[in-house]
Image (cartoon, rainbow, N blue to C red; front, side, top):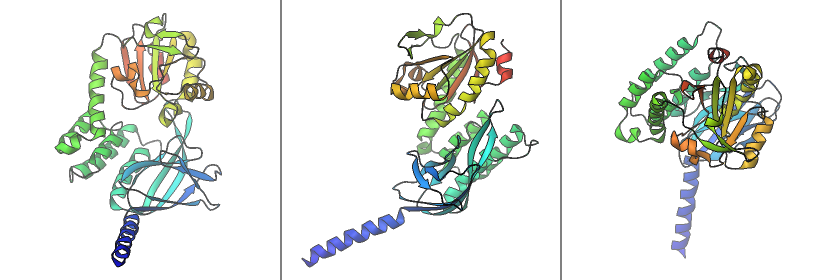
Amino acid sequence: MKRNYLLLFSLLSTAILFGQQNSVIVHGKIEQLSNNHYIRFGFDGVKIPVNKDGSFEYRDTISDSRYTQIWSGNSSIAYAIWLQPGTYTITCKETEFPDAAGNKLIALLGKIIDGPQDSKLYDGLIERLYEKTDTSFTEVKKQQKITRYMDSVLLRDPHHFLAPSLIAQSYSYVDNAEIQKYIGLLDEKQQRHEAIIAIKDDFKRKEKLTGEKQFYDFSMTTIDNTGFKLSDIKNKKLILIDIGYRTCPGCRAGHPTLTRLYKKYAGKGFEIISVSLDKRKEDWLATIKEDRMEQWINVSDLKGFDSELAKYYNLKWVPFRVLLNKDRKLVKILSSVPTEDDIEAFL
C-alpha cells in the first residue's frame, strides 16, 4: 500500500511539474479604436474577455513552442506571436493600415514588453514587418530594415531553432536572393522544415508560371452548379485569378478592394475569377454573400488544397493571386490585390 501511495505521489508531482514547466501566462493590455469586450487568441479563436481598462489575461498549457495569432474584435490583420512556456507582458494596439488600393484595414499590432527571449527575438521581426511610420518611410527602406534584422539574427546564429520560421515570416518582404542566402545557411534538418519546403515549392511555382505559355485551363463548378472552364472566358483583356478560403484573413481582407476595382473596370474588359478552397459549400456561399462577391465569377470543387488547381501548382498557402492577359498568359504574380496601375496597363 505504501508503495502505491509513493507511486501516486510521484505521478502527481510529475504532472504538476509538467504543468508548471509548460504553462503559458499572458498579461496583456489593448488600446482599441472601438470598444470590443474580447480578443481572440490562437487559430481556434478562443475568446478572452477584455476589462474596462483594456487589460486581459490568457492562460494555457502547451507541449511545444509554436507560432500563434491574437485578434481584436475588429482586426483584419492579427498580431503574430511565438508562444512558448513562460510568463509574458504584452501591449496591443488597433491601428488603421491602407491596403494596396488605399482602403483602410484594422491591424492589431503588439509588442512583448517582457517574456521568453526566443519569443522576443521573433517579436523583433514582427515589429519591423508591421510597424507604422511616417510617409517618408518607403517600402525600400522597410525592406532594408527587415533585411538588416534578419542578417543580425541569422548570420550570428543560422541554426537557431526559430530560423525557418523567421525566414517564412520575412519571405514576402525580402528579396528572393536574400531569402535564398538565408536558406543556404540552414542545416540539413532545418532545410526539411515545412516552412522552408513551402518556400522552395513557391520558387518552383513561380518558375513554372513564368515558363508556361498559358495558365492551367482548370475546370470547376459555379455557385449555381454550372460547369466552368477557364478557357470559357472570352473577350476579356485582363483576368484576375483570386484563390482563398473563408477563414483566411488575408484572402478576405482584399475583397473590399476587389469590389471597388471590379465596379470601376469590369466594363472595360477586367474580369475576376475567385476560386474557393473551402470544403463546405455553406462556407463558400456565406463568404460570397458577406464579402459582396456575387458580381464576378466564383468557382470551386470543394476539395480544399486537394483541388485540381491547387495540386497542379502545388499551393500550400493562400491568398494566391495572379493576373492573366486575354490569352491566359501570366502578367504578374501578386503579393496583394492589384493596383489601379496594374489594371490600367492592360485596358
